[in-house]
Each structure stands twice: as C-alpha cells, then as structure tokens.
Length: 213
Image 1: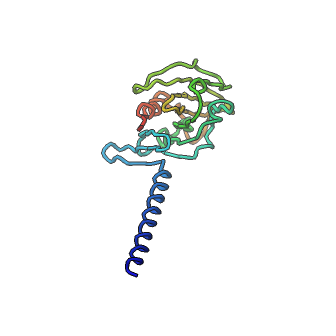
Image 2 (image 1 turned 90 degrees about the vertical axis):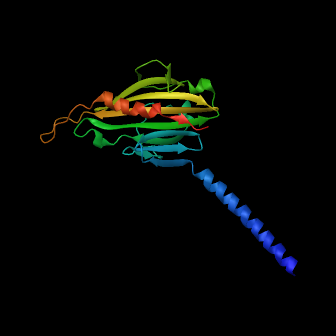
C-alpha cells in the first residue's frame, strides 16, 4: 500500500513538473516584447525575442506595438508589406516641439520571413521618391534604403525606409516625419519645426538598433 501511494505521489510530481515546464515555455515564448529601463542612462530598451532585435529610446518617447492607424505613405501591398508583420513604433512626444507645425515623428519596425533578398530590396512605392534605392552603412550594418514623400490636404509626410536581411528575415525600419500647415491663429504663433533636429532624433534610434541573435 505504501509503495502504491509513493507511486501515485511520484506520478503527481512528474505531471506537475511537466505542466510547469509547458507553462514556463508558453509564458517565455509569449514575452516577445520587453521594456527595460536603464536608470543610469535614462533610456528604455525594447527587445523583441520573436525577431531577435533590440532598440533603445529615451524614456519620454512613446512605444506602441499596435500602430496600424499610422499614415504609412510607403505602403506596398503587393510587395514586402504583404508578407510583413507589424512589430512596434516609437514616437517622439509632441511636447518636444510646442507651438510649431510639428504633427508627429516616429520609427516603426516590421519584418517579413520567408521572402527572398531580391524581394526585400524591391520597392514598389507609388508616391514621390526623393532618392534612388541605395546601400547605406549604419553601425556596421548595410541597409538598402530609399527616401520618399507625400502631400495631402495641407499635410507633408516624409519617410526614410531601411531594409536589411538577417537570418533569412527581411527587416524594415521606417523613419517618418509629419508636419502640417495650421494657418494663422490670433492667439498662437506657429513656428517652423527644426527639421534637422527631428531627423537627428529619429536617426539616433536607427543607429542603436541591433540584433541580439
């Protein structure tokens, strides 16, 4: 009887161990988006386990993992974006540029698996291109990049798109800058935002993008 009871206990413990292991793996796999605050440098680190990369950004910037409401002027429904997974966006706060024509500026990251490098480097964007596709080396990584813009109802959109293949995954990092013509107001003086400063802030995030495997 005692041996039978010990057998039941052993089976129960083994079952509990298996359940715990499965639960741990499920939780570990689901935690693909991590935000870690580095109190010494004043930056946050966004790590995505599913796609094996991380990017740092200042603590006052705004991270989102659902940004499908963004105005993506480079949308390419027949090429890269048809296969891509939207991963994350990081916005500059509007408080950085008060009383200016600044609307928004952000970096968004998406990635596509199981596509060829040739398709990764193919841009079928229909809006006005500001540059021809070309290679650009940033932080020892060689990106294939293009600049483009669009105008719509007093709004001006400009984007810089960077693509790169890594571990058979095509990564796309977009830097986006949106300004608007707000007209004249009797109570507020609207100034021209410092475009160079905005692009520098966006570019700094791209410079510290890196793979973790």
